[in-house]
Image (cartoon, rainbow, N blue to C red):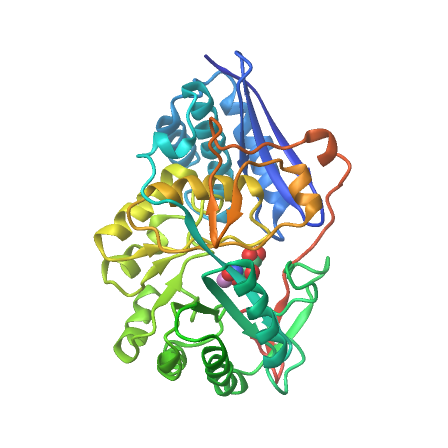
Length: 402
Ligand code: EZ4
Ligand code: CO
């Protein structure tokens, strides 16, 4: 059995997605997500120009060998573009293997370890009052875990507050939108938000908050301490994580759990964070961390060090990534939480899928393979639109992490 063709499909059903479809000589096909928000065409070119020619004629069941071939064979290792491209190939090959075996992918990687995948949704609002209304909406929808973000008094905009409540799309302009940031206003405001949320919704609902890489370690330590009375499940990306040892400082000061990793590409981005138990949740996911094969390696290392998974699941990760993530989530021993930002109906129509939400859980498809596909005719009706993520500046104009 051989790979005969691989197509790179770029489509924009309300937002841009890059998808790889691999076709074999006996007609079985597989799909993989290759979307890198704001840099989509770089991955599309990496696949079309450099990877696809090397796939033709290969045995699609040699998943590990193909991963190693693309990783070691490029000579230039790691990085989001390379690892998203490798992820797309790897995901598509697992999809094909599942179809050949007649089994959902989760059964090929150890089988079910839990009845459903606990997900968290995003409640947000310009004011605390608006955010409370949104928390109530997610509670009513059955969510057991809710991320809460609000506007900050005195600041025109911040990360995580959306116009269109169930959907959040930060890549909102071809040339990046400019936001302004004040750490002191933020640190003073956030504890007041969670004080209100806990007061209204009680101790049972899991609460999370995304700092989106904006603090230094000692500032993050102060935030974590100030949130301890409200028992958060995690603070996310408290600081940019290039300096892994920087997280030691956060750990010395607070028991608020820490989650990191949505921008990580390989186990080498979090090896020290995990080995030294500097984090509680690792947020890498299928598309940006080298596919199912490499993500499982990260999660296996994490399991040895009391670190659980908390995979990224924003709207810029396509339903193909979500389908694959759910197979991993339901199988691994150290699953923690899965982020779930809903896709728009246009996206859902382009990517027909068998996973579904019920009572706070997502359930992977029981169909052979991943249980997701791309409708290529429909996809062709939504041409690519340039869109960039925002940039962030301090009040004096200094560039800051967004
Ligand atoms: O800003 O996926 O936890 N979720 C996030 C996301 C990221 C986007 C970037 O493309 O932080 O909303
Ligand atoms: Co995040």
